[in-house]
Picture 1 (cartoon, rainbow, N blue to C red):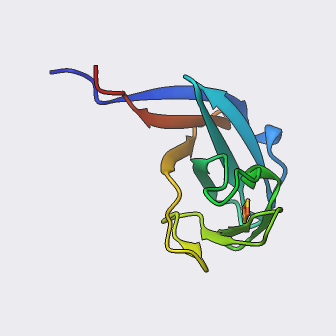
Picture 2: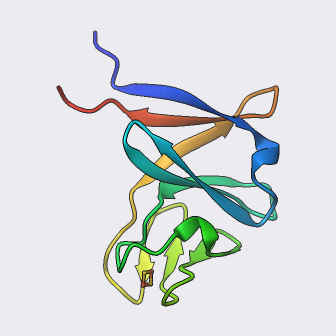
Picture 3: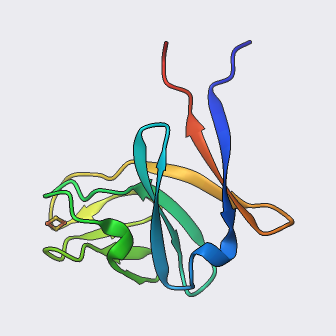
Amino acid sequence: MTATEMKITLGPLSLIPPGEGRSFEIAGERIAVFRTRGGRLFATQADCPHRNGPLADGLVGGSTVICPLHGWKFDLSTGAAAPASCTLKTYSVSLTDQEQLVLTLPVPEP
Ligand code: FES
């Protein structure tokens, strides 16, 4: 059986203040990780599908982020956008007992 996903430790939870996002470059992909004020974690593609706005610098509220460039709003859990009908790639991010952020990525097809 071959692995279909890989886990990557990003660092301590304290890298991301509550209500903010940070972007990371992993295996050639830019991924934004968000920590809501309510303590939930989300990870999406880092660049807005409209014109590549830096989503990690957007306004995080509840489980949404608003792109800082033109105000498109994305649901962080599903990636769904408003007003556009595009969708962000989403990833699984979790926290270890030692408060380390761990991202789970699909392994690319060979
Ligand atoms: S670049 Fe994100 S809304 Fe335009």
